[in-house]
Image (cartoon, rainbow, N blue to C red):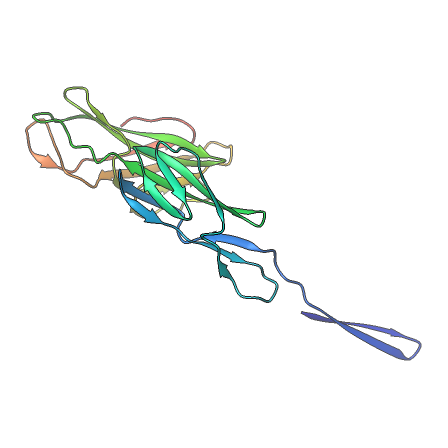
Length: 216
């Protein structure tokens, strides 16, 4: 708020002007990893920024999914349908807000097999958003994709990811059209068998360039 004053020929007039920010729509969370069949919810909050209070518009907002085979949504209630990644979007009063859901199939490794290869690749989601995707290949050729993992950044040339950051997957990052390098350590969160039959979590650390798939 500001007071604007005009003076002319000994007279003075003032006016009060209040400038408010644009209305916003935000979601309760922006990223989740769940197993197939899980039902969860997200909230949509509309802030008009006109001096009135923000309100919950979860039910009245229009919700859409980028991939109904992965996740469906209605009134903020989300059902994980199958393995993969989907973008869920809420729209209200001309504004939109999105979240990313990654669904793992809850698959179990085939009996009497072991992990033969662990591969990590970049996957484009939407706009300029990318994700690291972990895939395990077993000795009989079976693949389990979108395996849950934890991650840590040991080096980042990206402007939107800092060295030393860590978390539970999926790791999402924004690409700006340029090429940069990140060094990431990825560790599976579930235990799988190695070639000796021992149950253990697998870890790999490597560098990769933005928009380039990589396999450790």
